[in-house]
Length: 203
Image 1 (cartoon, helix red, strand yellow):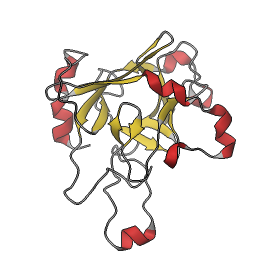
Image 2 (tube, rainbow, N blue to C red):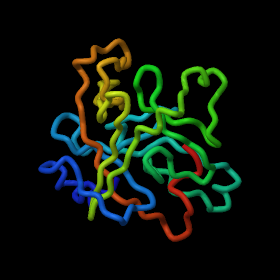
Image 3 (cartoon, rainbow, N blue to C red):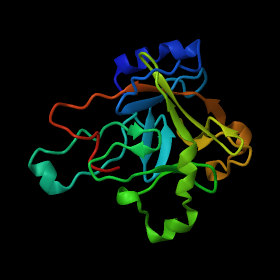
């Protein structure tokens, strides 16, 4: 995420929630803006999971070799949402949901998933994700079934995995829940290059 985008989120340190407006950005970046170990870490998607602090905030994405050779691949460097529960991709249908361990995940392209993962997917959990736009920045949130907000749980070498803030969350690698920290997910509008139709071909 660009430094200018992070600076635009600075008001969140004093006010956790942005006031809604009618001008909802068509797509947006997400960055942690709560004080603590994940402050200013950008959201990054990798292998269907979401992380904070992975590298410099870049995400894992894919573009077919033929499209890449033709110079028509979208940037694919940031994890960008086109609404509160969908990734911004050329290949449609990557839905964000909450799995049985309360981890934030994304389906594969075309709203599908690998057969071995299908039992773990309840895409209806995507209904709890909300985007609250603001004048210059906004907030991404999750509220459903008594769950409110997000947790960042230690994963490896300063990387945190993203969960919803539930007392039943099961952190990775045998970590205890009290090692996780709640955070506010701020948003800033993502502007595509002139020749792109989405932020990534697919994640």
